[in-house]
Length: 293
Image (cartoon, rainbow, N blue to C red; front, side, top):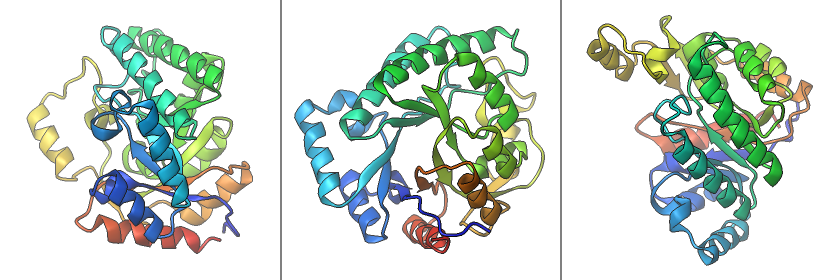
């Protein structure tokens, strides 16, 4: 069992559903050390924040005794699998990292799309080229684009990351995604990806039946035979279910111990994407993590 965790605790304030300013207040109220913020569109779109606005937001966060653990820069649309739209996505991703740096943070979490099994697959090469460019930019900024785990096994993700030749593209480790979709072991995954983990999510869930990850996350050129029924099954929770911490199949004793064993010192950030009482669930999740301190 993990003992005396010293990691800071973060929360994704968008989970509160009350906007940035009120979300910051709620994060402070429940005792979080930091916040992750979605920064793709709306008030946190980099294009909507002037230099002065960024400075003011950074001061506001600091004055509340908080810091930014990461920004969420997931641009959807199967990640970076489509060479036609990748130039615009890469540019937008760079601007989100610029914003993160202006807010005193050097991590942007994202999904890049499912990495094909075969390196000879043209989509593999497209993703590799996009991520190599992002990695180079992030390295120059001393920052990271952190891929969220889940769409593929830890071993396969590592094999892809190893081809990029740097750590500018790294890992945002989400144990629940692995449990719910691929059935991969998060504890083993931590050790496999240990050289790349720069941010983590604390989330729980269960896998109800085996499913092709492409059904959950989508992939360019892929469509299930009965795609309408599949979509209904996904939305209804037929394949997996996210649950409050401690109620799913993530072994948090072993997971936190594994993070300690690899020397991970970054944030443990609570993510709660479902449920009708998010504030209660997020608050309880923070308390859950505190039991390990």
